[in-house]
Length: 348
Ligand code: UT7
Image 1 (tube, protein in one colour):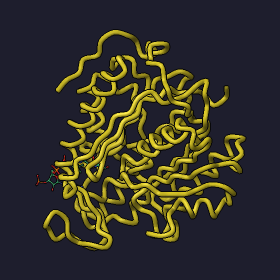
Image 2: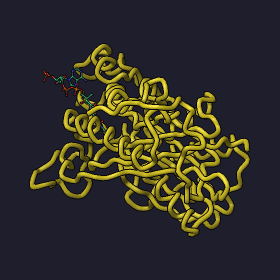
Image 3: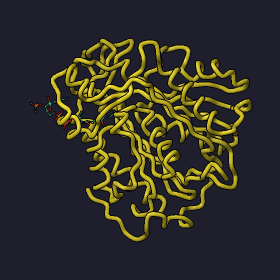
Image 4: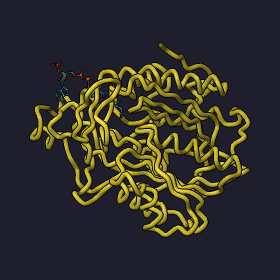
């Protein structure tokens, strides 16, 4: 499948985007990764692998790993602290906290409640959502919908995962991939400069067996699963899902909006594997130089990869006012979700 780039230059979409009915804008961002670095050399000492194999097959060079007493809610809190330190926003009137994660340390209360409890946001509701590596995009889609519908004005989203807590470090097919981190964004009502442009997503529950982690039950689709609470993945199947579903989703978004691949200023796909990113770029016609990711230094951080890459773009000045940003998440479920978003600088 190949979608050719036609027409305009990288910043050529400004003024061409369909009129948005959305009322939501991202107004602040923060992120956090733990201090401890796990390098490919470290992994060479743990399992039968090599730096060369890992870099060639995944592009990953190192990842960040939580301290023993550090969990997903701690990552979330640190990311929100970073947001508050960098942007002069008051969250006293925050309506809702959504944490996108599948590695919350407790089944109950949610990570979002632990965030609320830490900061004491007086009137915020709190909930976690689990859409694995597509969780941040789904959370942004939900927040946009609630704000646009007039239900809320201010929503805090955190995409966070502590995958080191759920990784089997004797399984070389998974332990080389995963790292820990969190990214937070504030989404606020803005009638003048809304960000949301278009959404496309879907799921294929028949592929559940290709990526799972057990909690209470060890049966899935009639099969008895590995039930030690660590992630199990059929990498080849998930790879195939990603490199077919994401390009098709990108094409659907472009069709919906009348844009071309050349109109996408910044592409932020879920950073699962650099080879997947390259394949998606080749199939969609979005050039790699427009892609923002954190795969080399942070590995696959699941729900955190997209906000970490967004924040990288903000910190490095790689996101300009009016840029058309395409975020696309995919992962266990199997699920996928993409959002076209018009970026607004925070200083306006
Ligand atoms: O974020 C959630 C979504 N997840 C993903 O998107 C992950 C998608 N999948 C992938 O990224 C890739 O499939 C992997 C990186 C997980 C694996 O790469 P691959 O190129 O698909 O390798 P493979 O599974 O086809 O395995 C090729 C060979 C096998 O050996 P044989 O059977 O050919 O002898 C594996 O046993 O590589 C072997 N292998 C390794 N060798 C050295 C698997 N893992 C390793 C390793 N080091 N870490």
